[in-house]
Image (cartoon, rainbow, N blue to C red; front, side):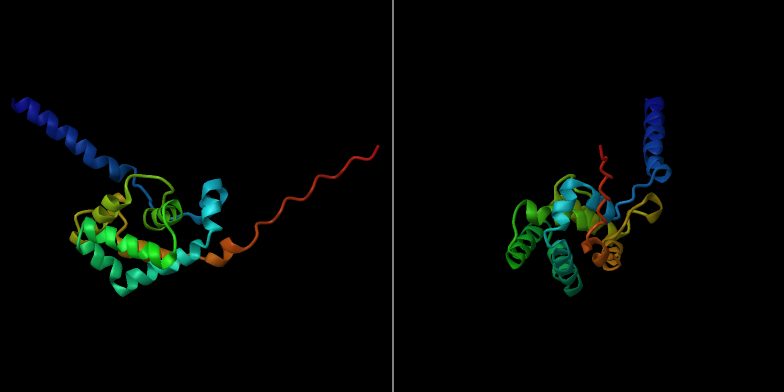
Length: 164
């Protein structure tokens, strides 16, 4: 029985070391989103306005207050945020997911954001393993250059026509 316990502890130690070897960066790469068809359509749909509203909700403490209430607080906040932006469904959740998680797709937003909030608040996750707190995520959002994404991308030059 003790051998089984030792093997289990060794295995769990290895699992604990994996994030340190390969840290996960969850920063939002807007240029990568712009190059992705699904991301491009989202960026063109007043994405910067969603970001500004999200930053405002965070700075006012409205978002953090909702997260303190747990899942029901998150749901109420999303409902109010949805009404204020006049968005729902994919046009609401895709930008929120990208802004908060840095990815177009992933697990449910409610449990994920609550986990990020609680882990950051309690300090259980360390920066050495690639964990980015909500404060750090919002600081990154403040530093994004929206103007460079809103400019038209240079068009490729047309190929020279061959004359016969």
